Structure formats: C-alpha cells, structure tokens
Length: 426
Ligand SMILES: CC(=O)SCCNC(=O)CCNC(=O)[C@H](O)C(C)(C)COP(=O)(O)OP(=O)(O)OC[C@H]1O[C@@H](n2cnc3c(N)ncnc32)[C@H](O)[C@@H]1OP(=O)(O)O
Image 1 (cartoon, rainbow, N blue to C red):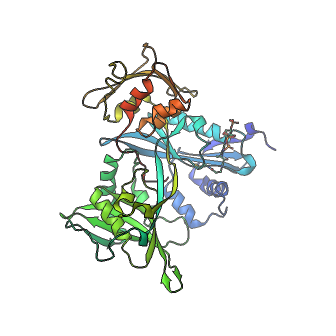
Image 2: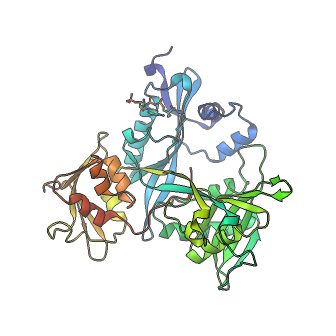
C-alpha cells in the first residue's frame, strides 16, 4: 500500500476533470461511470485553482472543490465565503489524513484571499468540527397530512388580491434571481445563488441523462410583484381507487409571509395531493402555524445544516447587525471580551465586541482586558448568526465563563429573534 506521503495533492486541470469526476462519484457511492453529459456539466462549473484532487500514481483518490459565495448575515449585509463541496476520499484511502491535508490547503488559500468564513453542508456531523467549523444554521422538514390540516376544501386562493400562476422554467430563470436576492437580504444564513444555480435547478445544465421537469408556481402580490416561487413534483400514487399523491417540494422561497402562506395553501389545495413533503425549511418556519391544525405537519427531520468556519473574527462580528446591546446584563457592563481559541491559527486571539444603541457591532482584536468568555472558534461559528445559545454551550462545557453571567451577555448580544436559515444545499 502506498504511504500517505506518496499521495500527492494538486489542483485539477480541465484535462483531469473526467478522472476527478470518476473519483467523486466513487466517493459518493454512485456509479463511477462518467458520461459525456456529466463531464460537460462539470466543465461548465470548472473554476481553475479551486478544485483539488489527491493522486496515488495517476489515479485520483480524493476530491475537494470550493467556490466563491456570499453569505447573508442580516440587515442586508453579506460576507464573502469560501464554499466547500464535493469532498470525498476513496474508501481504499480513508483515515490517512488526506481530507485533513486538502482542508488545510483550501482554508489557507481562503484566508489568503480574504474570505471572512468558509461554509459547507456536512454529510456527517463528526467530520468538520476538528477543522474549526460549527453548525450555524439548522433545518427542519415536515410532511403535511393534508386531510388532517383542517383547510377549507373550497376555493382557497389568496384573499388579499394576490394570485398564484403556474410558470415554466424560463420564467423561473427570469423571475427567480431577483426574488432570491430579496429573500437573502433579509434572511441571515442564506447563501447566494449564481446563474448556474438557476440553470442546474431548471434543467438547463444536467448531470444525468434524464430530467423530469417539476412544476413551478409563482405568487404575485396585489400590485403584481413576484414575491414567492415554488418548485415541486408529484408522484402518481393510488390506493384502492383513491388518489394518494405526495407533493414533494424541491424549494420554496418567499419574500413576505403572505406569499409564503399562499404558496403552502396552494400546495395543500391541489386535488389528489394528500401529503406535502416540505423540503428543508427554517427550524422556526411559519408553516405549521399556517395550518388550522399545526399537528398535521409532522416533523420528519431536524438537523444541523450550514456549517461555518470563521476565518476573520473582526469582519464576521462587524458585518452582522445586532438586536440587543448587551447592556446591563452583567453589572451594567456593555459588550464582551472573548478569548477565541483556534488550533489552526487563523482566527484565535482576544477580541472585544461592543454594540452601539443603533445595533452596530465594533470588534477590536488583540485587547489586553481580561477575557469574559473563552470558546473555540467552532463554538463562535454556532453563536455567530444568532442560532445557538452561549448559556446552553456553557452548560455543555463547550464555552467557559471567565466571569459569571458572561454567557448571558453573549446571548443578549448575539441571539436573533428569528433563527438563521440556509435554504440551499451545495
Ligand atoms: C462538504 C461535503 O462535501 S460533505 C461530504 C463528505 N464526504 C463523504 O461523506 C463521503 C464519504 N466519506 C469520505 O469520503 C471520507 O471518509 C471523508 C472525506 C469524510 C474523510 O476523509 P479522510 O481522508 O478519511 O479523513 P482524514 O483521514 O483526514 O480524517 C481526519 C480525522 O477525521 C476523522 N473522520 C474523518 N471522517 C470521519 C467521519 N465520517 N466520522 C467521524 N470521524 C471522521 C478521522 O478519524 C480523523 O480523526 P483523527 O484526526 O482523530 O485521527
């Protein structure tokens, strides 16, 4: 067996895409055959310098890809992210440190570029904490038992002058980007969708030989503005002459609660549909409470979703808006001194976070004041967008209070009234 040192990591050239794609499929337990269709799709997403492969001789045995992304942090602000995807190590070469080497190389490059964070959606919970990532957003999936929901079976279109129309893929590519930007601006945890995202998700770019066109429905407000869009599929299930179709939501985005309600109501009103599978929603989604009987929406999955690795603490903490000032939480003190531990050396140090009455954060690095709270950079990632509670992490022994009550101050500063949510998988 080759020693780990003989497995070289290098950036992938366009010529090497077929071999790299074969390794990617192998790692994800898909057929290793690389079709010309898939190769063409991969070529379209090729970013020089951002794809890594590990090679044992000429054979690619590990894959890693990153691409530029904007991560919304609330209040219309975003930070630049190094989005990581397509991470695989072939089973013959696992647990020999190959991922660790690829990750170190990619994160160093991201830091050098000036990215504020790195992001990923983790296949398994236990992989990425060791590299400084923490779960910054969670996602929930419900299955709605439509007959139990208590909705009025009579005509149920929007009563506020809005309307719902079915549209086709070309309309989605035209209308979707602006609507998504509108949603992302107000949704901490949302990530940017580039033109390619819309092409992949409307069948223009295809990885497989077949594509089943989904249904698309748009919600327009009373003044004609597009403020909601859903992509869904339906199976064709019958049981004893009774229609038992499930509507499977690929994605649903809405910029207003009215649009969101109208689209769920629409999905639950389609004849033959007895179940609606919601896809990945915010953990505090409005959905169950739109239904007269919220228990008709059964929670089928609740799991960590977007993992974040903070590379630049100052820019991360200054980018997001703050609801609270943290004032008065501990003996009238305002702000917080955090000791951030980062074994990889990207973001460690002592920082003071202060928040003005207007909700603007100021972060000073290298302060000499005594730390009030000590935490690893992965815990800071879980707290950063407001989802996790420092008091909870302190109870778990993952945040250390150097001053009694400091975790409560952290919560008063960092927590948000609605939870962050990332609607996408990448
Ligand atoms: C963003 C994404 O793309 S998510 C998709 C991730 N990919 C997959 O899940 C595909 C299947 N799995 C794989 O390809 C590989 O097993 C990987 C990529 C998860 C790990 O690659 P490896 O090269 O084996 O990891 P590496 O040897 O660098 O492991 C480093 C450490 O992480 C641990 N580790 C790695 N994977 C796992 C895991 N799935 N569960 C628990 N621990 C893990 C190792 O035990 C090791 O621990 P140690 O440092 O204490 O010894």
